[in-house]
Amino acid sequence: MIKLMDVSSLIQLAESLLNVEGAQTAYDTLRPAAEKITDSITILYNLSCYACEIGKIDEARKWLAKTFAEAKNSEYDGFYQRLAADDLQLKPLWGEISDRAK
Image (cartoon, rainbow, N blue to C red):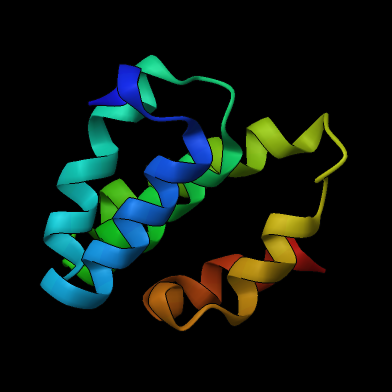
């Protein structure tokens, strides 16, 4: 499936599945892409959101840490920290995120 889709289409598919079938399906759809598409910060960020929603908090932390690390040396430096600090999907991690967003 990954070979047939570009990154933005895959992200949109996962978001659609989130709305229709839930976070687990969205996570399962996007997870294999993280290993094959290594230059998409959005995939990492979305995986952190989905993992948090399905109760995989430690895994969500891992994805979020990767998101922040990848964004650090790019035009998105600070963007994902600010986004995460207000993202309801990541509410269980807000206490940890708010320190990084400042």
